[in-house]
Length: 365
Image (tube, rainbow, N blue to C red; front, top):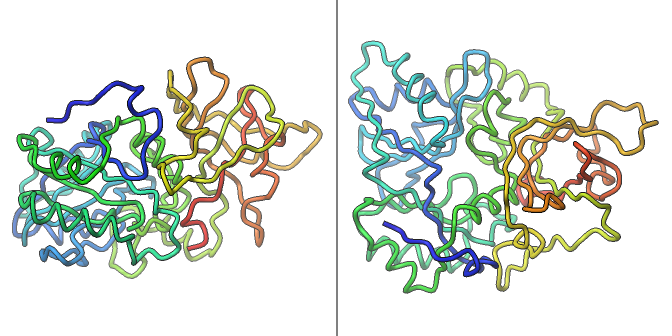
Protein backbone atom coordinates (compact mmCIF):
# COMPACT_ATOMS: atom_id res chain seq x y z
CA UNK A 1 0.00 0.00 0.00
CA UNK A 2 1.05 3.60 -0.61
CA UNK A 3 2.24 5.91 2.14
CA UNK A 4 2.15 9.63 1.42
CA UNK A 5 4.55 12.26 2.66
CA UNK A 6 3.80 15.68 4.06
CA UNK A 7 1.95 18.31 2.05
CA UNK A 8 5.03 20.55 2.05
CA UNK A 9 6.91 17.85 0.16
CA UNK A 10 4.53 18.25 -2.77
CA UNK A 11 4.10 22.03 -2.84
CA UNK A 12 5.08 21.95 -6.50
CA UNK A 13 4.20 18.83 -8.47
CA UNK A 14 7.04 17.73 -10.75
CA UNK A 15 6.59 17.17 -14.47
CA UNK A 16 5.95 13.45 -13.97
CA UNK A 17 4.25 12.17 -10.85
CA UNK A 18 1.75 9.55 -9.78
CA UNK A 19 -1.10 9.20 -7.35
CA UNK A 20 -3.17 6.34 -6.01
CA UNK A 21 -6.81 7.25 -6.60
CA UNK A 22 -8.80 6.42 -3.48
CA UNK A 23 -11.66 8.29 -5.13
CA UNK A 24 -12.11 5.47 -7.67
CA UNK A 25 -13.82 2.09 -7.29
CA UNK A 26 -13.61 -1.04 -9.46
CA UNK A 27 -16.45 -3.29 -10.57
CA UNK A 28 -15.74 -6.58 -12.34
CA UNK A 29 -18.12 -7.79 -15.04
CA UNK A 30 -17.38 -11.24 -16.43
CA UNK A 31 -19.18 -14.04 -18.22
CA UNK A 32 -20.08 -15.24 -21.70
CA UNK A 33 -22.45 -12.31 -22.34
CA UNK A 34 -20.35 -9.58 -20.73
CA UNK A 35 -19.20 -7.79 -23.88
CA UNK A 36 -22.64 -7.58 -25.52
CA UNK A 37 -24.15 -6.67 -22.15
CA UNK A 38 -21.86 -3.67 -21.61
CA UNK A 39 -22.17 -2.65 -25.26
CA UNK A 40 -25.84 -1.87 -24.70
CA UNK A 41 -25.22 0.22 -21.58
CA UNK A 42 -22.37 2.65 -22.30
CA UNK A 43 -21.74 5.49 -24.74
CA UNK A 44 -18.54 4.06 -26.24
CA UNK A 45 -17.91 0.95 -28.35
CA UNK A 46 -16.88 -1.94 -26.11
CA UNK A 47 -16.20 -4.06 -29.21
CA UNK A 48 -13.08 -1.95 -29.84
CA UNK A 49 -11.43 -3.30 -26.71
CA UNK A 50 -8.76 -5.96 -27.22
CA UNK A 51 -7.10 -8.56 -25.00
CA UNK A 52 -3.62 -8.07 -26.46
CA UNK A 53 -1.30 -6.02 -24.24
CA UNK A 54 -0.30 -3.91 -27.26
CA UNK A 55 -3.91 -3.43 -28.34
CA UNK A 56 -6.57 -1.01 -27.12
CA UNK A 57 -7.37 -2.30 -23.64
CA UNK A 58 -9.24 0.67 -22.16
CA UNK A 59 -11.94 3.10 -23.25
CA UNK A 60 -13.51 6.15 -21.66
CA UNK A 61 -17.32 6.09 -21.55
CA UNK A 62 -20.42 7.07 -19.60
CA UNK A 63 -23.45 5.29 -18.20
CA UNK A 64 -26.66 7.21 -18.92
CA UNK A 65 -30.15 7.22 -17.54
CA UNK A 66 -33.01 6.38 -19.95
CA UNK A 67 -33.48 10.14 -20.37
CA UNK A 68 -29.87 10.53 -21.53
CA UNK A 69 -28.42 12.16 -18.42
CA UNK A 70 -25.11 10.98 -16.99
CA UNK A 71 -25.09 8.50 -14.11
CA UNK A 72 -21.30 8.17 -14.10
CA UNK A 73 -18.19 8.62 -16.21
CA UNK A 74 -16.10 5.44 -16.34
CA UNK A 75 -12.99 3.84 -17.77
CA UNK A 76 -13.56 0.26 -18.93
CA UNK A 77 -10.66 -2.20 -19.17
CA UNK A 78 -10.69 -5.55 -20.91
CA UNK A 79 -8.77 -7.98 -18.72
CA UNK A 80 -9.72 -11.26 -20.44
CA UNK A 81 -11.85 -12.51 -23.32
CA UNK A 82 -15.03 -12.32 -21.25
CA UNK A 83 -13.96 -10.14 -18.33
CA UNK A 84 -13.96 -6.36 -17.85
CA UNK A 85 -13.14 -3.92 -15.05
CA UNK A 86 -15.19 -0.74 -14.68
CA UNK A 87 -13.28 2.14 -13.06
CA UNK A 88 -15.79 4.65 -11.64
CA UNK A 89 -15.98 7.27 -8.91
CA UNK A 90 -16.47 5.80 -5.43
CA UNK A 91 -19.42 8.13 -4.84
CA UNK A 92 -21.14 6.74 -7.97
CA UNK A 93 -20.38 3.04 -7.51
CA UNK A 94 -23.75 2.22 -5.94
CA UNK A 95 -25.63 3.87 -8.81
CA UNK A 96 -23.52 2.03 -11.39
CA UNK A 97 -23.94 -1.26 -9.57
CA UNK A 98 -27.71 -0.75 -9.36
CA UNK A 99 -27.92 -0.04 -13.10
CA UNK A 100 -25.80 -3.08 -13.98
CA UNK A 101 -27.99 -5.39 -11.90
CA UNK A 102 -31.21 -3.88 -13.24
CA UNK A 103 -30.27 -4.67 -16.87
CA UNK A 104 -28.67 -8.04 -16.18
CA UNK A 105 -31.94 -10.00 -16.64
CA UNK A 106 -31.02 -13.54 -17.78
CA UNK A 107 -27.65 -12.69 -19.28
CA UNK A 108 -24.70 -14.88 -18.36
CA UNK A 109 -22.72 -12.26 -16.44
CA UNK A 110 -21.35 -11.99 -12.92
CA UNK A 111 -21.02 -8.58 -11.30
CA UNK A 112 -18.83 -7.94 -8.26
CA UNK A 113 -17.14 -5.05 -6.47
CA UNK A 114 -13.37 -5.64 -6.39
CA UNK A 115 -12.05 -2.31 -5.08
CA UNK A 116 -10.38 -3.97 -2.10
CA UNK A 117 -8.35 -6.22 -4.38
CA UNK A 118 -6.83 -3.57 -6.67
CA UNK A 119 -5.36 -0.07 -6.64
CA UNK A 120 -6.06 2.49 -9.36
CA UNK A 121 -3.03 4.67 -10.12
CA UNK A 122 -2.77 7.68 -12.40
CA UNK A 123 0.67 8.51 -13.78
CA UNK A 124 0.25 12.15 -14.69
CA UNK A 125 2.04 13.90 -17.49
CA UNK A 126 2.33 17.55 -18.45
CA UNK A 127 2.51 16.55 -22.11
CA UNK A 128 -1.29 16.68 -22.26
CA UNK A 129 -0.97 19.92 -24.23
CA UNK A 130 0.13 17.98 -27.29
CA UNK A 131 -2.07 18.43 -30.34
CA UNK A 132 -1.52 14.85 -31.48
CA UNK A 133 -3.52 12.36 -29.40
CA UNK A 134 -1.89 9.32 -30.97
CA UNK A 135 1.76 10.03 -30.18
CA UNK A 136 2.73 10.10 -26.47
CA UNK A 137 5.96 11.68 -25.34
CA UNK A 138 9.02 9.39 -25.14
CA UNK A 139 9.24 9.44 -21.34
CA UNK A 140 5.68 8.11 -21.04
CA UNK A 141 6.49 5.33 -23.49
CA UNK A 142 9.62 4.49 -21.50
CA UNK A 143 7.87 4.22 -18.12
CA UNK A 144 5.06 2.19 -19.70
CA UNK A 145 7.59 -0.32 -21.03
CA UNK A 146 9.40 -0.45 -17.68
CA UNK A 147 6.17 -1.17 -15.83
CA UNK A 148 5.17 -3.88 -18.26
CA UNK A 149 8.55 -5.53 -17.81
CA UNK A 150 9.08 -5.16 -14.06
CA UNK A 151 5.48 -5.10 -12.79
CA UNK A 152 4.14 -7.80 -15.05
CA UNK A 153 0.94 -8.41 -13.06
CA UNK A 154 -0.19 -4.79 -13.45
CA UNK A 155 -2.47 -3.57 -16.23
CA UNK A 156 -0.80 -0.51 -17.76
CA UNK A 157 -2.63 1.54 -20.42
CA UNK A 158 -2.45 5.00 -21.90
CA UNK A 159 -5.14 7.21 -20.44
CA UNK A 160 -8.01 6.52 -22.88
CA UNK A 161 -9.32 10.07 -22.57
CA UNK A 162 -6.15 11.38 -24.22
CA UNK A 163 -2.74 9.73 -24.53
CA UNK A 164 -1.00 12.97 -23.55
CA UNK A 165 -2.62 12.73 -20.10
CA UNK A 166 -0.30 9.88 -19.12
CA UNK A 167 -0.94 6.34 -17.95
CA UNK A 168 -3.60 4.50 -15.98
CA UNK A 169 -2.48 1.48 -13.94
CA UNK A 170 -4.52 -1.24 -12.24
CA UNK A 171 -2.45 -3.35 -9.84
CA UNK A 172 -2.96 -5.74 -6.95
CA UNK A 173 -3.32 -3.79 -3.71
CA UNK A 174 -0.99 -6.20 -1.92
CA UNK A 175 2.04 -5.57 -4.13
CA UNK A 176 4.52 -2.69 -4.21
CA UNK A 177 6.34 -3.36 -7.48
CA UNK A 178 4.56 -0.57 -9.39
CA UNK A 179 5.51 1.99 -6.75
CA UNK A 180 9.10 0.75 -6.70
CA UNK A 181 9.46 1.00 -10.49
CA UNK A 182 8.03 4.52 -10.52
CA UNK A 183 10.14 5.84 -7.67
CA UNK A 184 13.33 4.29 -9.07
CA UNK A 185 12.53 5.94 -12.43
CA UNK A 186 12.36 9.40 -10.84
CA UNK A 187 8.60 9.76 -10.64
CA UNK A 188 7.29 11.71 -7.66
CA UNK A 189 4.61 10.33 -5.35
CA UNK A 190 1.85 12.87 -4.74
CA UNK A 191 -1.46 13.35 -2.99
CA UNK A 192 -5.00 13.07 -4.30
CA UNK A 193 -5.33 16.86 -4.25
CA UNK A 194 -2.70 17.12 -6.98
CA UNK A 195 -4.65 14.70 -9.16
CA UNK A 196 -7.83 16.74 -8.65
CA UNK A 197 -6.02 19.95 -9.58
CA UNK A 198 -4.44 18.28 -12.59
CA UNK A 199 -7.67 16.86 -14.06
CA UNK A 200 -9.54 20.10 -13.31
CA UNK A 201 -6.79 22.06 -15.11
CA UNK A 202 -7.46 19.82 -18.12
CA UNK A 203 -11.22 20.44 -17.88
CA UNK A 204 -12.11 16.88 -16.84
CA UNK A 205 -15.00 16.24 -14.46
CA UNK A 206 -15.44 13.12 -12.34
CA UNK A 207 -17.94 11.68 -9.91
CA UNK A 208 -20.77 13.87 -8.65
CA UNK A 209 -19.60 16.71 -10.93
CA UNK A 210 -21.04 14.68 -13.82
CA UNK A 211 -24.28 13.48 -12.22
CA UNK A 212 -27.38 14.30 -14.27
CA UNK A 213 -25.34 16.20 -16.89
CA UNK A 214 -25.52 15.88 -20.69
CA UNK A 215 -22.49 13.95 -22.01
CA UNK A 216 -21.60 16.32 -24.85
CA UNK A 217 -21.77 19.35 -22.57
CA UNK A 218 -19.32 17.53 -20.28
CA UNK A 219 -16.96 17.02 -23.26
CA UNK A 220 -17.23 13.22 -23.09
CA UNK A 221 -17.06 12.97 -26.88
CA UNK A 222 -14.07 15.34 -27.08
CA UNK A 223 -12.33 13.03 -24.62
CA UNK A 224 -13.10 10.11 -26.93
CA UNK A 225 -15.84 8.65 -24.74
CA UNK A 226 -18.73 8.51 -27.23
CA UNK A 227 -19.12 6.41 -30.36
CA UNK A 228 -21.61 7.76 -32.88
CA UNK A 229 -21.31 4.64 -35.04
CA UNK A 230 -22.22 1.87 -32.58
CA UNK A 231 -25.69 0.45 -32.11
CA UNK A 232 -28.27 1.47 -29.55
CA UNK A 233 -27.52 1.93 -25.87
CA UNK A 234 -29.46 3.20 -22.87
CA UNK A 235 -30.02 6.97 -23.07
CA UNK A 236 -28.69 7.30 -26.63
CA UNK A 237 -31.46 9.50 -28.03
CA UNK A 238 -30.53 12.76 -26.30
CA UNK A 239 -26.82 12.34 -27.10
CA UNK A 240 -27.52 11.55 -30.77
CA UNK A 241 -29.96 14.44 -31.11
CA UNK A 242 -27.54 16.93 -29.55
CA UNK A 243 -24.75 15.70 -31.84
CA UNK A 244 -26.90 15.84 -34.98
CA UNK A 245 -27.88 19.44 -34.28
CA UNK A 246 -24.20 20.28 -34.81
CA UNK A 247 -24.02 22.83 -31.99
CA UNK A 248 -23.44 22.18 -28.31
CA UNK A 249 -24.53 25.40 -26.63
CA UNK A 250 -22.67 24.89 -23.35
CA UNK A 251 -19.36 23.28 -22.47
CA UNK A 252 -17.55 22.46 -19.26
CA UNK A 253 -14.36 24.52 -18.87
CA UNK A 254 -11.75 25.14 -16.15
CA UNK A 255 -12.17 28.41 -14.28
CA UNK A 256 -10.29 30.55 -11.79
CA UNK A 257 -11.86 32.47 -8.91
CA UNK A 258 -10.61 35.44 -6.91
CA UNK A 259 -12.15 37.57 -4.16
CA UNK A 260 -10.37 40.66 -5.52
CA UNK A 261 -9.93 41.72 -9.10
CA UNK A 262 -6.36 40.90 -10.25
CA UNK A 263 -4.41 43.82 -11.69
CA UNK A 264 -3.30 41.55 -14.55
CA UNK A 265 -4.33 38.15 -15.80
CA UNK A 266 -1.79 35.80 -14.20
CA UNK A 267 0.39 33.56 -16.28
CA UNK A 268 -1.52 30.42 -17.23
CA UNK A 269 1.46 28.72 -18.82
CA UNK A 270 2.07 25.18 -17.73
CA UNK A 271 5.78 25.02 -16.92
CA UNK A 272 6.30 21.73 -18.70
CA UNK A 273 10.09 21.77 -18.35
CA UNK A 274 9.86 21.19 -14.59
CA UNK A 275 6.35 21.19 -13.22
CA UNK A 276 3.00 19.52 -13.80
CA UNK A 277 0.83 22.57 -13.06
CA UNK A 278 1.08 26.36 -13.29
CA UNK A 279 2.33 28.01 -10.11
CA UNK A 280 -0.90 29.85 -9.27
CA UNK A 281 -2.73 26.52 -9.10
CA UNK A 282 -0.02 24.82 -7.07
CA UNK A 283 -0.13 27.72 -4.59
CA UNK A 284 -3.77 27.06 -3.65
CA UNK A 285 -3.98 24.89 -0.56
CA UNK A 286 -7.60 23.78 -0.38
CA UNK A 287 -9.86 23.97 2.63
CA UNK A 288 -13.22 23.25 1.02
CA UNK A 289 -14.87 21.76 -2.03
CA UNK A 290 -18.33 22.72 -3.17
CA UNK A 291 -20.53 21.29 -5.90
CA UNK A 292 -22.98 24.14 -5.63
CA UNK A 293 -24.20 24.96 -9.15
CA UNK A 294 -23.83 28.69 -8.37
CA UNK A 295 -25.09 30.83 -11.20
CA UNK A 296 -22.49 32.95 -13.00
CA UNK A 297 -23.52 36.55 -13.59
CA UNK A 298 -22.14 39.43 -15.63
CA UNK A 299 -20.29 42.01 -13.55
CA UNK A 300 -21.98 44.69 -15.63
CA UNK A 301 -25.53 44.38 -14.29
CA UNK A 302 -26.90 46.42 -17.21
CA UNK A 303 -26.08 43.58 -19.59
CA UNK A 304 -29.26 41.72 -20.50
CA UNK A 305 -27.74 38.66 -22.18
CA UNK A 306 -28.55 35.16 -20.93
CA UNK A 307 -26.57 33.94 -17.95
CA UNK A 308 -23.08 33.01 -19.16
CA UNK A 309 -23.07 29.78 -17.15
CA UNK A 310 -22.91 28.14 -13.75
CA UNK A 311 -20.26 26.75 -11.43
CA UNK A 312 -20.13 22.95 -11.41
CA UNK A 313 -17.39 22.48 -8.80
CA UNK A 314 -15.37 24.97 -6.75
CA UNK A 315 -12.23 24.28 -4.72
CA UNK A 316 -11.40 27.21 -2.46
CA UNK A 317 -8.24 28.23 -0.59
CA UNK A 318 -8.14 28.26 3.21
CA UNK A 319 -8.73 32.01 3.37
CA UNK A 320 -11.36 31.89 0.58
CA UNK A 321 -9.42 34.51 -1.37
CA UNK A 322 -8.83 32.31 -4.41
CA UNK A 323 -10.02 29.11 -5.99
CA UNK A 324 -10.28 26.97 -9.06
CA UNK A 325 -12.96 24.75 -10.47
CA UNK A 326 -15.14 23.75 -13.37
CA UNK A 327 -17.99 25.73 -14.87
CA UNK A 328 -20.58 25.18 -17.57
CA UNK A 329 -19.98 28.10 -19.95
CA UNK A 330 -22.47 29.23 -22.58
CA UNK A 331 -20.98 29.35 -26.07
CA UNK A 332 -21.64 31.77 -28.89
CA UNK A 333 -22.45 30.33 -32.32
CA UNK A 334 -19.49 30.65 -34.73
CA UNK A 335 -17.44 32.19 -31.88
CA UNK A 336 -17.22 29.54 -29.18
CA UNK A 337 -15.95 30.99 -25.91
CA UNK A 338 -16.10 34.77 -25.85
CA UNK A 339 -12.65 36.33 -25.44
CA UNK A 340 -13.80 38.40 -22.47
CA UNK A 341 -14.68 35.23 -20.54
CA UNK A 342 -10.95 34.43 -20.57
CA UNK A 343 -10.17 37.68 -18.71
CA UNK A 344 -11.04 38.70 -15.14
CA UNK A 345 -13.48 41.53 -14.57
CA UNK A 346 -16.47 40.40 -16.63
CA UNK A 347 -18.01 37.50 -14.70
CA UNK A 348 -18.80 36.75 -11.06
CA UNK A 349 -20.40 34.03 -8.94
CA UNK A 350 -21.35 34.21 -5.27
CA UNK A 351 -19.30 37.38 -4.79
CA UNK A 352 -16.15 36.01 -6.46
CA UNK A 353 -14.57 37.13 -9.71
CA UNK A 354 -14.67 34.22 -12.18
CA UNK A 355 -12.98 33.69 -15.53
CA UNK A 356 -12.07 30.80 -17.82
CA UNK A 357 -8.45 30.01 -16.96
CA UNK A 358 -7.61 28.66 -20.43
CA UNK A 359 -8.95 26.51 -23.23
CA UNK A 360 -7.82 22.90 -22.67
CA UNK A 361 -5.67 21.15 -25.26
CA UNK A 362 -8.61 19.12 -26.59
CA UNK A 363 -10.74 22.22 -27.29
CA UNK A 364 -10.10 22.33 -31.05
CA UNK A 365 -10.23 18.57 -31.54
